[in-house]
Amino acid sequence: EPEVTQTPSHQVTQMGQEVILRCVPISNHLYFYWYRQILGQKVEFLVSFYNNEISEKSEIFDDQFSVERPDGSNFTLKIRSTKLEDSAMYFCASRSTSGGAYEQYFGPGTRLTVT
Amino acid sequence: SQQGEEDPQALSIQEGENATMNCSYKTSINNLQWYRQNSGRGLVHLILIRSNEREKHSGRLRVTLDTSKKSSSLLITASRAADTASYFCATLVSGNTGKLIFGQGTTLQVKP
Image 1 (cartoon, each protein chain N blue to C red):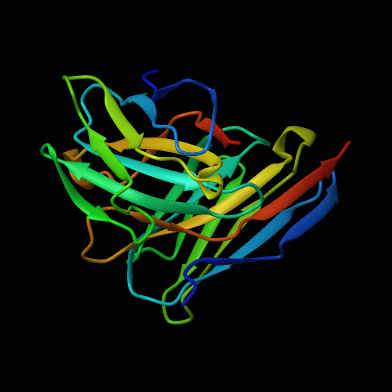
Image 2 (tube, rainbow over the protein chains, first blue to last red):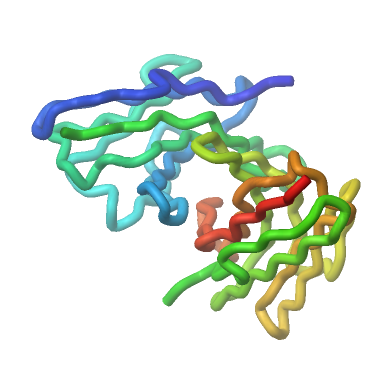
């Protein structure tokens, strides 16, 4: 069964460093998302991406964040200058557009630890 | 305002019992989805119920939706130890680009 994959599973970085989190969505999906979950808290929407552009972003997704689909398979989230409060699990998700399908399929997540 | 608030926050039951979790939301929705998360892992989609549906079944799962009360419930029947996980409701708000708004979740522990 197709699945969303994410790399790395765990990233440790120092405050102020840039990180790139990578995702490979399900191949025939056209909508892509990033969410994050701070330890012990709920999952929060960051950004949605469709047709090679951001379709919606949350207040969390400030100028330090960017997303890119550099090729036909990868979808990346970049944090330019990490802060301690960026420590969280980051989930990528994708969904199909066919038949009004709204189920989003989530990857296993990348645990980002900023020290 | 908070969208998608679950109760209870934590639930502990014996294997074989039924588990019921509730979710309330505030805005109009297109659909409501339930996800499961094992500790430290990703989110697994369980079931989706559209705003024009009232009840849906999938295996041991039963979901109800009451749009007049803006609430939903997830029932897991004949629970198993393997059902131990956190369960989240997520709403797809009408007219948006498909972002899901998650609740705080219910942590379910099923004791063998």
